[in-house]
Amino acid sequence: MPRLRGDVERVVRGDVERVVRGDVERVVRGDVARLWGAYAVSAAGSAVGMGALPLVALLALRVSAFQVSLLTALSAVASAAVALPVGARVEFRRKRPVMITADLVCCAALGSVPVAAACGVLTYAQLCVVGVVRTAAGIAFDAASGAHLKALVAREDRARVNGLFATTNWITQSAGPPLGGLVVGVLGATATMAVDAASFLGSALGVRRLRRPEPPPPARSGPSVGDITSGWTYVLRHRVLRALFCNAMLFGGSVMTASPLMAVLMLRDLGLGAWQYGLALGVPCLGGVLGSRLSAALTRRYGQRRLLLLAGAARTPWLLLLPLAPRGPAGVLAVVAADFGLLVVAGIFNPAFGTYRMEATEDGHMTRVTTAWSVSSRATQAAFMAAGGALAGLLGVRGALVVAGGLCVASAGFLPWGGGWEAEAVTTSA
Image (tube, rainbow, N blue to C red; front, side):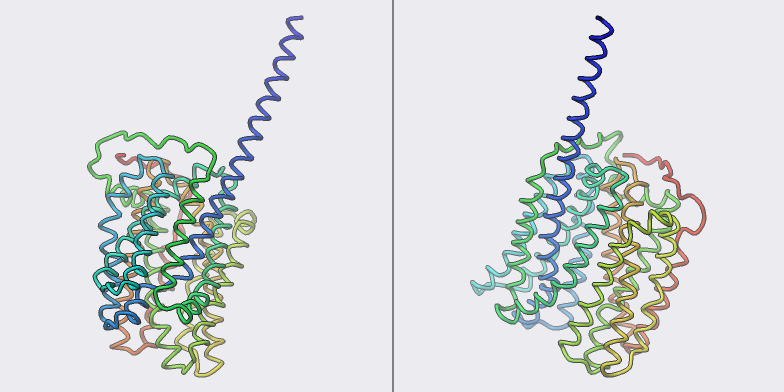
């Protein structure tokens, strides 16, 4: 009898454990779907409102080209000063309240612009403040959401989930800007900012609906001195992350150098119409959709290390095709083909990279590493864009694009071609 009772207890206990485990798995799957829905709403709104601040500055306030450039640069640099201490504090707090707060701050900041415009009190200074607040809150949200997603998703599912989020981003990037242009044409320059503000409110509500309790944040294990810079310290002490960081800064900076020059190349040098320019911007994003859908399967087939190296190198030569684009319809095809090829490979690379960074970063440093990476990317890209404008003045638009393409190819040399791909244990002060 005791043996029978023990067998019954083990069976019952096993059944209960299976039921509980199944319930937890269903909740996690549901939470991933809810989190994806919140991200999709926010990404769609941001895509519709892409470039809205400079557009409002130009159309509503009639500011100079220098003031438009200053608005972009100020948003990148000043937001870094705001986001760095915030990112260090977020590391040791629960992430969902931070994500919700960041969304609500973005909603309020962006929503203030159409309200001020309707009341006739919109100023350039307000646009500058909104740009800084929006960018800083976005960095805080990204830092918190990266650590939150890592805790929510099992290791074996991260590549698939990262690919899903990347695909959503590319889809919204394809459809959002043309739709935003239509909204501006019908409702005015500030209308897309109202759409973007509403999307952040939807994102906050989506995060609020998550059901699984958030795990406790990591405990602070040392003094707070150095928290602000510890994200960079962690990255620079990790051989592979350090190489990927240098590669990302040079690659991203080169691409952003070419970004504003493309408008000049297509609209002035190639003689394209506005609709052709919009087509050349939107269609290549479908390449990102394709690449992100392939990323998880290619990672399983070739391995994470090989895929990151091959895709990281294969995404670099495409910019060199842009200065070769001829005038007329052939120029449109050349630009679309170059951008499509770049975004296919970037779409493959980005989810695999995001998954590797999650796995290589300890939980207690995830937020600070993400913050340091985001701040560095924004500051580097702003500097490269300014340098690209100066180069265009000296060498012409095509000459500046050649330089940007050369730097992009050079970024492949910073990829971690050597060893050290295992997730190294890095000792840093929390």
